[in-house]
Image (cartoon, rainbow, N blue to C red; front, side, top):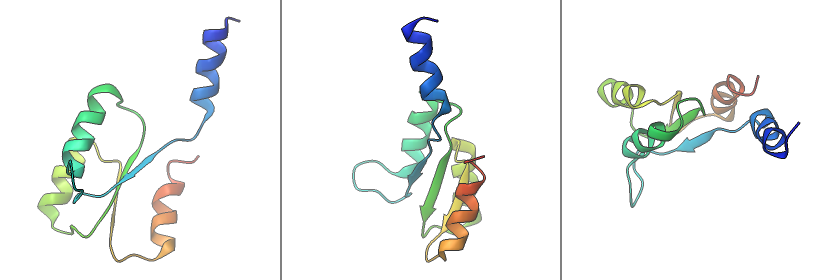
Length: 87
């Protein structure tokens, strides 16, 4: 097995996900998700935000958000969403 294939297998075995906010200083979370999805369609992106409007949530899903947690939140809520992607 080549070194390149071994490296890819190691990367694929890692459990990686991103947590972003919608309201960020240099780039909002929706824009980040859209740009990220141009290169990566599979890595989960969880939104952790105060934005609770259904329109904003739908915009995030359309951009490629994998999960949405509204602040303030209980640790169990975030754990529940994260666990979906660690299987």
